[in-house]
Image (spheres, rainbow, N blue to C red):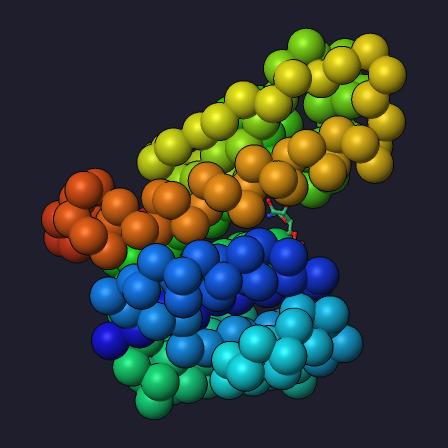
Length: 203
Ligand code: GRF
């Protein structure tokens, strides 16, 4: 069994996860990068790191269920047990949630429930909070709404710009996300019972 990372963009978290998984000899390897954007820079990282990668074109499918059905086949072919979203700019639908109950994680660049959705670092800077941070949480049907696994604060200093704050947040992300996954893989955090994931009826 192994882990898939889903990304849509730069893939710096993907790279940090792969590096840590190799250094720490995780019991399950990261054996797949899945992108929903064929131009994503994450794909270049996968090539450099020699991690198998696949790119999907969600717009070519009639709906989310059809897209996720294809994704699911791909995950099954690669023997994937865990999914780590890392900058995957898409809501996960019932097809994947039902196939992977409490096996999908996400990382978000704020202290949830503050600043959900896109541009969380900018939202925090513009709001003027003194502390922001990083959250790793289980994925459910909502946008950044699943139960929280772990969080780490990041101080917003008066001289911070988007660039400096982003850098500090990413530094924390690159440590927190692998640390949480390692705890799950080694039984130091136990996932909830799969039958306890209740999904609303598909719309
Ligand atoms: C990260 O800030 C992550 O928290 C958010 O999207 C960003 C992805 O960055 N979900 P990268 O592609 O891993 O560099």
